[in-house]
Amino acid sequence: TVSFLRDVSPTPSWCCAVLWVRQFGAIFAAALPVVLHVLLLQEGWIGSLSAEMLVPVALASGSVLGIACSWSMQRIWRERREHLESDYRVLLLLPHMSAQGRRLASDAMRLARKRCAEATTSTAVEWAASRMVRTAADYVAARIVAGRA
Image (cartoon, rainbow, N blue to C red; front, side):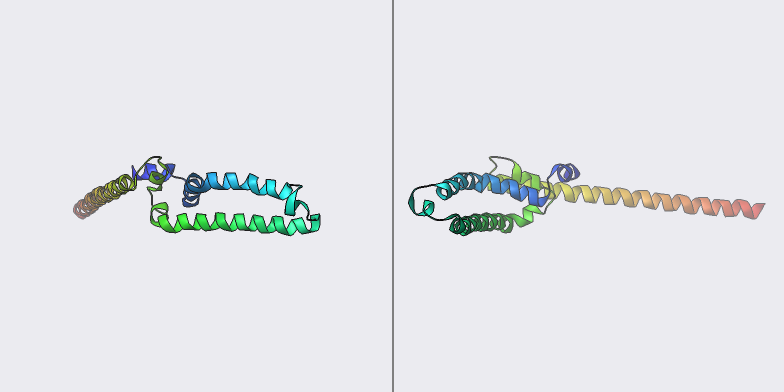
């Protein structure tokens, strides 16, 4: 189950982008047309500016929007970095999941991963030990047969 979650989970940066769109996408989607409308408005203070002066105003407003976007993305990354870098980060993308439900699901995934690692380790150790015993027995048997000949 852990390998399945690791395989289907998007990269941490894409998970962060999805979370950002959910949290702030509507705000920025509404702000961008308003800013463009104000910049292209013919009446008022902005409309009276020449094209040479309108460019710095447009650059400044784009910079403000970019800084706000970057700040909000970094905020999400800092708050959820541990979960975003884990193998079960896809749990963050499930809609309508409470923080308690996400915590319980991540605890269950950690426990499943631990049990899976323990089972794999003990099975691998048993296989390696039986293989070594078999190889040693074959070697001893070959030496005994070679000694009789």
